[in-house]
Amino acid sequence: MLEIRQLSKSFGGVKAADDITLSFAGGSLTAVIGPNGAGKSTFFNLVTGGLTPDHGRVLLDGIDLAGRSPPEIVRHGVGRAFQVARIFPSLTVHETMLAAVGADQRRSSLLHRRFPLAETRDRAEHAMELLGLAGKRDRIAATLSHGDQKLLDIALALVLDPKVLLLDEPTAGMGTEERWRMIEKVRELWEQQKITVVFIEHDMDIVFKIAPTIIVLCYGRILAAGTPEEIRRNPAVIEAYLGTEDHPGAAT
Amino acid sequence: MTQLQAEPAVERVMEKSPLPRQLKLQRSRNFDVLIALTAFAVLAALPFLFSSKALLDFVIRCSAFGLFATSLNLLVGYTGMISFGHGMFFGLGAYGFALIMQRSGLPIPAAFVCTLVITAVVAGVIGAICVRLKEIYFAFVTLAFQMLIHSVVLSWVSLTGGDQGLRGGIPRPVFLGIDLSNYIHLYIASCALLVLGLLLMRQIAQSPFGYTLRMIRDNAVRASFIGIDVWRAKLTIFVLAALFAATGGVIMSLFVSGAYPEFAFWTISGEGIFINMLGGVSTFLGPMVGTVLLLILNDTVTRLTEYYGIVLGVVILFFAIGLRKGLMDFAVEWYQARRARRKSASG
Image (cartoon, rainbow over all chains, first blue to last red; front, side, top):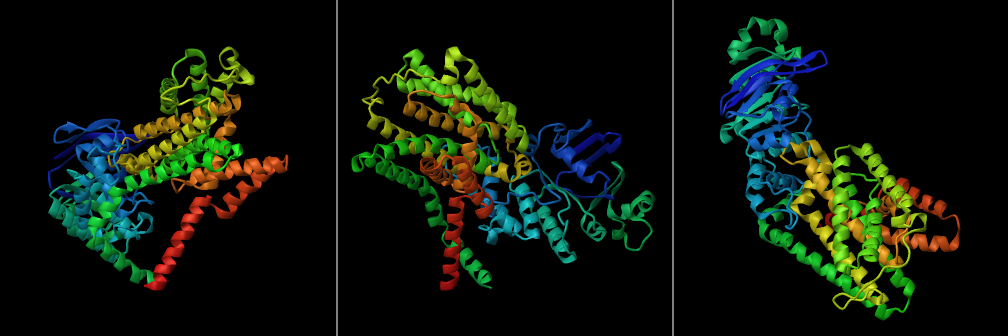
């Protein structure tokens, strides 16, 4: 259970996160939407330690993580993937996974043994299988396609066995068909792994089809939160974000 | 087309034979030890095969600079930290060891360990200040510390001898039957330190920690988001690299029987960077190849012309602009390309 309480952050006079209070039930799947500059990525950064909140609390199973460093927060079980895939370009897919498991097992500063460690193999293998990257294990990450790099980024978060997985636009930069494939993958992972997944998405068709719960951010505030039906009918959302067009996806 | 065909074949091999692959990975340390022993045997045999003292001098200098340059590559090539002040630890090793030997009367191994301890403390303090800085700021602040140490060496005349250097020789009491005032003993000891140092650095590079360094080089933000304490890892490698650089300095001080301010001057750091550019930073032995190249260049060019700097400048331009990589990088890429061509031709 991830609870966000009165989380706030401002840059100069701009309130990028304004008194955000939310809770994500264990094992839930939630989409975060909002126009550009609504504070979606800031919200993720505040939760994962990329930014330090001005005030507020981030409670994971009752432990306050607000203001802690990214490595600490990751070790408490909050993993994340990035809008622009952040990977290790010179490592192979396999090495990336092995090294990440090693980091999770607190073995990343071992000097007297050789990489890769035998005890990291199974989990690395499992993560590659889950994301469908096993066949590309010996590819250098930099040579992967854009979609595979995004998958590798997600695999990097998932291989750490997080309790909560935050995905910043898993479908960014993809064509329509690839988007659907990616989001199906995300849903599949969510169902199989029984973890809490929160993802940012711009494509309204995807959001309304996939996410049981939707949160709408606007100017750093929560404009609305609820089921797709509730969001669709919410007058504030319609006015501020979805607009009156037939195809709301264009509003982004 | 050939690539498309070649790829599944490679995958199939990997899937079918996980065991040999695993074995290969475990065996690699023994393989490194084997290479190290062979290299040491060859180096140790040189004095009995050739009577040229110049050759042995050359190998000793290669040992000192090779350790220094390879340790710099742990920072530059493996971690992406471009230090312009790494030479300060070379100087620190030379002065530290020579001073301890002159003033304390400790046995040589104890003095060596003391030198390493002092270096670790100094590197720890300087590293703690520097490693948080990014790229160019890191480079400049390390350079500033280098200049600081050099100034201390110059101005603290009563301790270091100032610009005259630390003279009067280094006492060399015999330990474990090793007499470093005997030239052959000194030569063998230098080779042993070189080989052992390289072996240890190779182990660091291939350890889980070595891969942590690669991750930090590739994407430090991502590394921190999988739970790696980037600052601590950078500080650790900064200190470890300093120890090997200091070992190079110790060899140098024994070789010249003293220590001179040039050992702590920024040009030593510059030479380290230059060696890494010559040899290349993408392979472990690149800096070692670069060391040999630079010292050969150094010796031949200074004999032929007084315009040493111009020749060196042209060479570095050739590597930086012409090849755009070091010699070892170039050789490895050429070899891989050839192997790929052969594979596609036969498949």
